[in-house]
Structure formats: structure tokens, C-alpha cells
Amino acid sequence: MAKIGFIGLGAMGLCMARNLLSNGHKVIGFDFSKVAMDAHVENGGEIAISAAEASAEANFAIAMLPNGDAVKQAVLGPSGVAEKLPNDSLFIDMSTIHPLETDQIRQDLLDQGISMVDAPVGRTSVEAELGKSLFMVGAEKCDFDVVQPILACMGDTFIDCGGPGTGSRMKIVNNLMTTSLNVLTAQVLTFSAATGLNQNVALEVMGGTAAGRGHMSTTYPSKVLRGDLEPAFMIDLAKKDLDIAIKFSETLGVPISLAIQAEKIYTDAQADGRGRQDWTAIFDMLRKKQQSKS
Image (cartoon, rainbow, N blue to C red):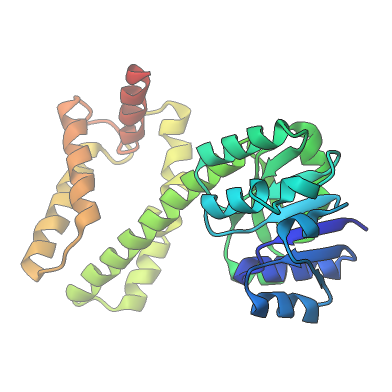
């Protein structure tokens, strides 16, 4: 059984703390919300008057907080975790914050002899409730091994992203994809309805193509990620179809702003002489442009 200080008992943190309790750990919680603290006590946990007191003599201190400022205050500020967390213990930040903030917090803690693991959470509060979260872990190998049993109490998937700071970076990359796809999905379904299509039919069709299945699990592994740019579906044709959709959306009065931005990239690809390459060559083009700047 480990003694764990848990800082941040919101929608995600509260159920994660409960899952730790149900696995036999002693969890001392701290949150500025009395309602959250009371709920933690009802779940069988203990509470403290500060992040420092929650972390006193703990084996692990965990933060699940809304932003970088909150993490810095809770960890390094007055009555913060760093004041009382033992040097042979681990601080685990499961918050989603700027990767450079993660790096700075880690360095500040190392200066005080405390090791840190960044382990932001994938999936939602629904999975957190069930103990099926995914953790993107940035840690030294020895710390990754130590933290796995704790993460296993709260989730069913924990991925070593490649060393300190990489968990934080992976979370931002992942959320760039999901938040952008959310908007694109909303725009596409709005456009679909405006054309007169039945929503269930649209979902069925797109669920069977790369539109719904996702390029990362379909087109990219079979083409560009193998270095194969021979066209299964060429950029010229993709651009033609995209132009039709944009013109049709204008006729219907449906804004599809992400498609307009995408069209500019396809135009760039044609100007780059890639019109007859596979549409996944967009990645090859962008990657090489970025490499040329480095």
C-alpha cells in the first residue's frame, strides 16, 4: 500500500482518487473546493489543509489540475507539494499543460532533489470513472517502472512516450488532432445534412472509409509512412473533390472553414509538383519543409 497525496479533486481527479482507494492505497486529497473534499471523504479518503500537507511523507504526489499556473502554484508555491514531499518519492503531473512549463517544473523540482513524471491523461471522465484511462508517460526509465503500478489503478493503458517531458508533448499533439477533428466532424455533418442526406447513412458510409476510420490507421501506414508515394488516390483528384465540396457548400450557405484551409495545402502540394503523388504525400511535403527550416 502506498501513501498518495492527490491534488485536484475535480471531475477526473475525484474518480481517479477513488480508484486508488479501491486498490488499497491511502489517498490524502487536497482541493480548494469543499464539495470536492467532502466527496473524497465520502469515498473513503482523507483530506489535508494544503498540497504540502497532503504530500507529507507520501510515496507519490499526484496533480490533476486545470492549467500550468495552477500546477506551479500547487507544486512550487507556498504550502506546495515540494515543501514536504520526501526526496525519494515521485511527483506525478497528470494535468494538461504547456510542455515548456512541464520542463521548468521538472527542473525546479530536480533542483530540490525531487523526481517528476509527466503523465497526462487520454480519454475522458467516463473512462476515468471506470479505471480505463490512457496515460502518456514522460519519465526516466527507472521512474516509469516505479509509477506503472500506480497508473494501473487508474487506467488500462500507459505508454512510455520516450523520456522526461514527452508525455506532456504527446498530450498536446494528441489533443491538436482530436480538437481539430471535432470541428471538422461538426462541419462535415452540418454540410451533409444541408445536402439532404440522412445522418445515419452518412455515419455508416464515412465509418467505413478513411473519413471515419482515420488516416493514421488506414492510408498513412500503407503509403507515406512506408516511403511509398505512388498514388492509391492522387493529390490532383483529392484537390478536385475538395473543390467540389467547397463550391457546393457555398451554394448551400454552409461554412466549412477547415476544408478551405486544407484546400490551400493541396494547392501548395500541386505547386510543389506533387499532383500525381498519393494524397498522403502532403505529410512528406510538410515534413521536408519543416526539416529545411531546422
